[in-house]
Image 1: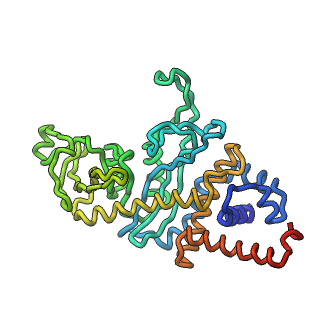
Image 2 (image 1 turned 90 degrees about the vertical axis):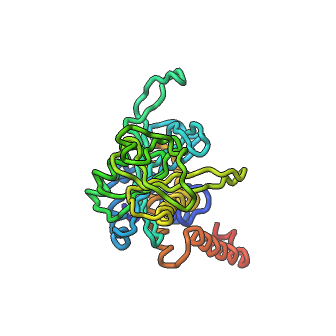
Image 3 (image 1 turned 60 degrees about the vertical axis):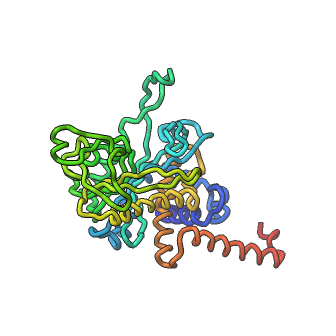
Length: 358
């Protein structure tokens, strides 16, 4: 089984178009049924513990408690033409701001000050229950658990069971609920850096907090390049907040990003520098989609879709190891593979042997 997995991972790393079992069969001189039935339709492959077994030795060489970060973010793989099942469902897309059909992954990723990029695991958001929707006037599929529930459960496993070494947890504003912040502070005893919405209620002093005098964070005066302590409504301890000006690329208008952290000794620059590490998960998503074809499962069966995702994540681990060895980013590695393959094809054409070998 491991040999088949390695062959499939090497194949998706080497491929530049959609993944097809017939091409893999020709490449390896093996029946495509071997890969389809013994690998993609294996009900035991997509397993959290098996994935952790692949991740653990690599992570242990790089993790640290000084600058290590766990990053959390979701990624939607669009499947507009695929039949709906428990994993292919309708989800709200943060980019398009509308409902889109696809597979939604909640990803957990590790990085640190060195820029290492290691997946820690993921959860596919499944919708297995049908409930009546007043908005749509029909039955729609719903998930048994919220993303916040899954986030806390997975962090508990990474922290207590897998004993990942890290200091900070980074995430977007969608996960910045009081419940999540309290969980990180009290259950995990760790630090967080995250943005909050501009309508969140805060008090400027402990006295105002005790009197219930809260105002929208957008109304307080924080000069650029500075920070201050605040009390977020519902959160007991003080937090440090910075206000970052963000330019809109389309119209040039300025918006504001409010970042909060429970590591109140950090400076403005330190808060910003740590949060910038969150970009590693965006690079991870881009590499999964463009270099590892995670959206293009060879079949539309739920089991094969899950297994293809599992193997694509394993493929990312291999690409990251190659990056460290050859000092090339994932896209440069893929380009080098393409150029080398092109050289072989070019030589065959020159030698007029191409027709004979096909």
